Length: 242
Image (cartoon, rainbow, N blue to C red; front, side, top):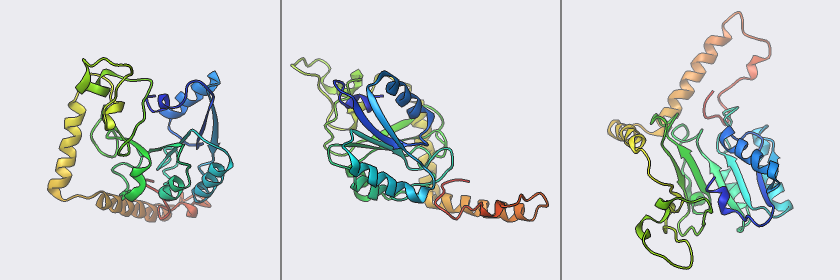
């Protein structure tokens, strides 16, 4: 909600997204769409191999205020592998946000210059094994976004300062809210500390999952109940989970 509140409020805004965004974003977007504040275009998430070209074509078609899409689609586990290609095609005046929740701690990510341009959101509830209540937003260095929906932690160092405008922290804390229960942060820190201690990499976890997928499919194919046409089911494609 704070990210959406960075967009203009005095006109209708244009949002480009996919047909397979998780309910937390899609529900909020549909409600705002009902008010007439935003006009939304949704690119089909499947086939995933056509997603990036379709997104690039739409980005060239007209101006956009926000591009929001998932790294891994929650309803299919299909992964978008052309993140850099899509972000590079996005005009400078368009806010880019990637929902990395269903990829975080499931797929290895070497973002390179990607995070110099895009906002990245994820959380520790599922694959990161940190439990509920811990999520994060990465914002590029020198981010100047000023969310209209804001909390008093967003400029904690200058609470007593009064001026002509509302100030914000110089880093990602500009999106902070207010007081919170930090227990989730300690849980996630413990999990990541265990990974570091045992030398476990996300790439190792991903390979282990793929091995289990292959074992499952080999066993299933020997079952008399193996359904016709199911041979097309394969974890060898761009999938994070099966």
